[in-house]
Picture (spheres, helix red, strand yellow):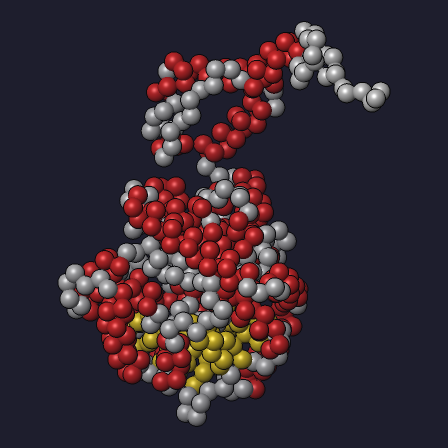
Length: 481
């Protein structure tokens, strides 16, 4: 799917053409949202955990400089080589230089959304390095030459039959095989050989503890551990916002992460990495990639609290219906629609409008990011900066003028009712974006204002028994007895 020349509405329109897929995608993600709700309700202190996590992250963002220096000092003390990268190009150059120095031409990766942001795979492949994503969902997406559509469930938009065809084409599974267990066993056998033969591995970072200089990687497949334990060179790529101050804070986030993302009590593997084993090299790359710019935006800095659980995607009615690839950005869904304009406001100007502003994303966020409020603020910024579509700007100006004038409002209402009743095709056509996926409602016979005026007129007539539209009060019982 090409996304460079299409915006969210156009890409979403492609996705929802397959109504069966759309319904299935919607239902699958809502099922995960329900699991999240059940898991959270099993913990009486759930809201206290959310409050604590949010406050810890606020502290980190207010003191990020100090925590990063503390973390760096402890990493070095633990024998880990530290690198700093301002952007994707610098990050990718660092990774390539580490591999080139060791004459390594094969790399196995576990899930890392940061490296997806940096387009690391493409960068390395162009320079002769073979890269394999070992997370099963990302592996499927890589075989199909597509980016992840969800930060936790990369191939959630694919049916098992499609995955069976991809495996048949690329790793030789029997044609027509679509049993998930069988396909997983084939993938496991294939990836096991990758782990055994690759000298270098790269992981992401879920949480980094400033106090101890260690980092934690959370997976459900154990692929990060396999790569790390079998490799001679271990590289970790980390966004600078992943810091937490002390190890005692880690339990709060681990309890929130899996329950929010998949409804599990905890991820199956929560692996701590602190020191290289004998004969192994460990490198950690601290990456800015627009994060300090977002930190400097008071209205949007709280988005850096995100722990990448995916809960906002699972609950969002727009994401569930339109699919992750329609967001044409590495991080999709509500949180991605906040982060993307920070990187390129013009390219991603459409994304903050891909929301109903219902607030469900904010309600489920484990660190209490006011996501829907930030989406609304981004809309204001984008319009002020001149990046909103002309049709949207003109439409809003026309609506503002109409709603600010009672006479204009009444005239427009009468005209719209007349057109719907007499020339419905003037509105119910393909040029009306609203009509593309909806049936326009029947036109009312009269407006509320007309109904109200008519009933007010009838209420001036006095009735003996009183009532809702009379000037006399309803007779009240007496207490003479």
